[in-house]
Image (tube, rainbow, N blue to C red; front, side, top):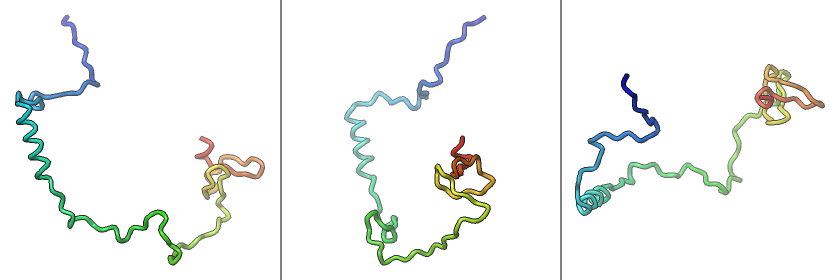
Length: 105
């Protein structure tokens, strides 16, 4: 039997073509500086942030357009996560507080 060599699967895998050639430091630095000089960002392609509200912005002139629906007869509010859940997700009731199955896991 041939002894098998252990393989370290966590070690980085490199191919011969990925290995750097024996180049001088000056040549490598020249290639990198040429690559960084040609990387120009065209700012016209990006969208502006006109429609984005920043934290702390004055929103007193805005009006909410969300319809709030009260808790239905077949729903309950979890006493732990405070989310409104369907009664099929009721895990237990303790001292008048109801708890959902997600909070019981």
